Image (cartoon, rainbow, N blue to C red; front, side):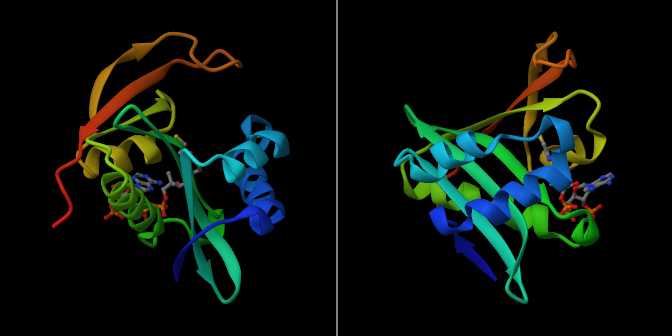
Length: 147
Ligand SMILES: CC(C)(COP(=O)(O)OP(=O)(O)OC[C@H]1O[C@@H](n2cnc3c(N)ncnc32)[C@H](O)[C@@H]1OP(=O)(O)O)[C@@H](O)C(=O)NCCC(=O)NCCS
């Protein structure tokens, strides 16, 4: 089941971030900022009462910036990531965004494959984008109006 996340999900989202991103995870303070910010939207995929995946976007100037997408390792490769990204796009369009943008580590083959499959195009490379030194691809997709 897909639903919007709220502040009560903070602990569960923190746990999901930890298991998915380990030392590169968002800290609780940033997750808290996301959940409280009216310019963001956060969606979760829930199975048997447990959050199996999440996506968070920031909406600014007609653009949707994907801040995070994560699926629990035990539930990956079941179409949850794609469903979350589709839902995030729908919400972004509803809130007036015409473009979606994201950054992804050049080393993150699963995520790059997910984004390419959804129609994201690489705009360029951002050398040393991450604090731990990895390069990122900057990717972009034009959002067609909701049908
Ligand atoms: C990236 C991530 C969100 C994908 O979620 P998922 O639920 O496993 O993805 P889906 O099952 O919806 O897969 C959709 C498509 O993505 C691609 N994909 C996903 N995982 C892949 C993998 N391990 N290897 C290659 N391609 C992969 C495939 O094209 C797949 O389509 P297919 O299954 O029909 O071949 C998940 O691997 C994850 O949480 N990774 C850790 C966190 C992370 O890196 N997030 C992105 C940060 S930018």
